[in-house]
Length: 100
Image (cartoon, rainbow, N blue to C red; front, side, top):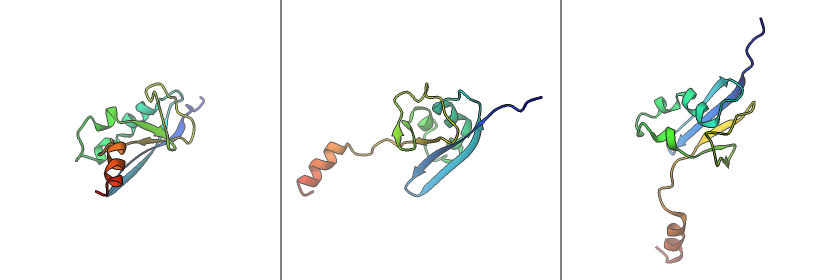
């Protein structure tokens, strides 16, 4: 009997004070969003709202994904879960330019 083919991937998330990378084996065709769910990484961040990881923007090796629900993973991919911006970049730039 042949072994089931799996892909080794990572799921990563970081807060300023805490970072986690979960390594897991997934079936071919698993999407980035599915890998986040399978990793159960949300359990390592109980201080965050429960749905944080269900709707967070995702990327692979620093490249944002437009459709994480459709992006199939490849061997060795690292899915990165992005935190929402705390301050709009344009607003922050205006504040810095105004000296405040």
